[in-house]
Length: 150
Image (cartoon, rainbow, N blue to C red; front, side, top):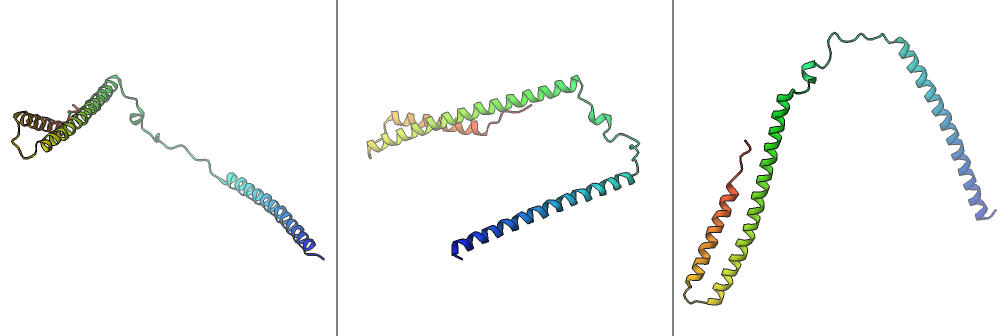
């Protein structure tokens, strides 16, 4: 026998073994299903019919829908929350815009100060520094400010 024939014989043996295993597994699975059915039928026939509980599980007060007044209050609260979120989003956008302006002005002032050298500072640059300081205080105050949600 050549090595190729031995290899083919081994392959055939493997296939036969796999076929036998599958066949026995399907028989075993069939027996398992049959035994489960028999157990369930016998246990079902032995069960005592259950009586309904004397009172409902969920009380009607829990399942009740809110009345018109409660719905109106909930809608108002939702609107107040939406207004609160919108006002805070606007405030945050203004803070971001002013922060960008502040950064640009500060960089520009620094560049002008560096170009002057050690000479005296002109009044124009002092006014610009005061404007930057005022804008910085406004941004800081806006950061602390929160819009009340009622």
